Length: 229
Ligand SMILES: [Zn+2]
Image (cartoon, rainbow, N blue to C red; front, side):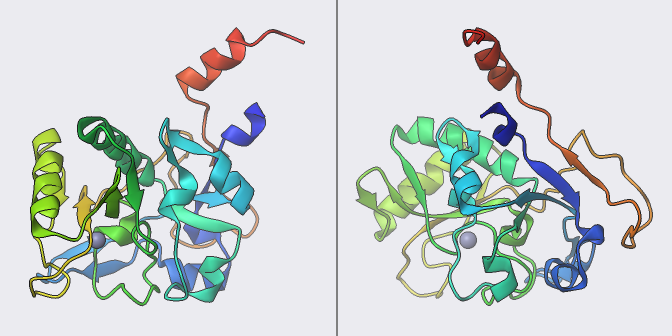
């Protein structure tokens, strides 16, 4: 049980050719305003659907909620093992605070969490490709289709943190329709503490760079509270 709670962190420069060509670690990408951003290099490796469901990033957010995609994602990236930038942990932390402020469950859309650079909705850099953006279609019982609801929850997210960015109602179509709240934390890159950074941006054939994330304080405490067998 405790063993499965640790997540493997990989350096995407060490993944196979196909995965590297899809994830594009360290490559530069322009956003809609023409600014350049460097794509993430360190990813969580998710071995199976069961593990994705089991791993909690925060008390109310499972890792699986951030990797829901359909056929718009590259076929290889729909199969396990799957990969998600490590900064998703910071997004989950923010969404946990947002959930508390909304006092209701927060539901991420399909294709509304991590989208790889190969995803069909990835045209230019968006924080979705950094694992730091979420599209939310439902909060509690409320389906976010009206301008009033979307603006209310946008305001709630902005009140929580100056680091959170939301998009205005109608941002997808430019018209007066919308069906989700978009929250992002920008082009954040996370280098997990367990990783030793190597300046060589080439695959390490003989020495793969990976680590297992150390277990969090609360998890360690829960284990020590458990009766010893
Ligand atoms: Zn979005």
